Structure formats: C-alpha cells, structure tokens
Image (cartoon, rainbow, N blue to C red):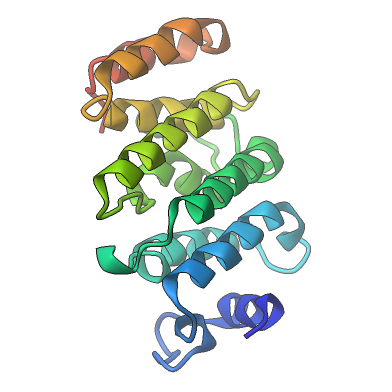
Length: 204
C-alpha cells in the first residue's frame, strides 16, 4: 500500500463507524511508523485539507491506537530515528505556528484544538522498545527532541517540552536537570516555576 492510500484512509477514518478492515491496519508496525513520520513532516500543509479539530483528533488516534503496537513488533532504531526527527518538524512547522501561546497546566484561554495534542504529546506518544539497548537510545532521542522544542518561540511548545522532561526525569534525572539548566535562557518567566517542577519530575 502506498503512503497516499494510507494517508487518505487516515484522514477519512471515523473512530465510531470505521471498521478494523481499514487500510490503516493493513501494514506492519515498521511501515506504520515510516508513514506516520511522513505524515508528521507534512502536517502543516494538512491544514489546507482538514480543520485543526480534525487534525488534533488524528494525533490522538495515532498515538492511542495506530502506534500502540505490541513490543515484539516495534520497529528498529533507524526507523525510530526518522520518526522522532519528524516530530521535530511537526513542532517547528505546525505547533510552533498554529498553537495559541497559552499554558495548558494553567488551563489558560483562549486556546486552539492543536494545543491539546501539543501539551500532552509526551504523555500520549508510545515510546518504548522490548530491547533494552534500543529503549535507552530511543529515550535519549526523545530528550533531544524535547531540547529542540524548548528552544522554539511558542510558549505552548516550551511547556510541552518541559512537560515531557518532567516525565523523563524518572528515566534520566541528571540529563533532565542539565537540559533545563542549560536551556534556562529559553524559559520565560511564566514557565520558571513549571521548569523547577519538571527538574524533579513533579509534573502532571
């Protein structure tokens, strides 16, 4: 199946009425991650085809259902590298431009539909591997993406990065502390306290 076929099925998939025979489920996990990476990399242009509300729903659907595969079916590290690299593009070209610069942990308004996925990204994204070496490498790559997102201009992207770093504290406490300390110049006053919470893993 081509990427174009998979993408069309994803854009038209209805979680209430579509069946498990959809083309979305017709490819293996490595190909699913490849196609998802391509989808993320071109997500900004998708707003010419679908609404922000629809795109936000697709992000949640991908994370909770499509990408949530059994550990033995996870793709190898090279695919993860491309996939996480595409997440950088997604944050830079979509969330950084189209999210409202408001804070999710304060429930600030007005917001946009895309703020939901942006803020919760590192909660909903499945990032695991059955192989310990691959798992360590993947978690480290995620920290690289968060570091990049912390440097973006939109307050929502910075908060998302800190939210993720707070969750990763339990995996790599010293690395999280270092990233936040070195990235302090990218953290504006409204996020200083949240950054302190992230440095000790105290985020929700």
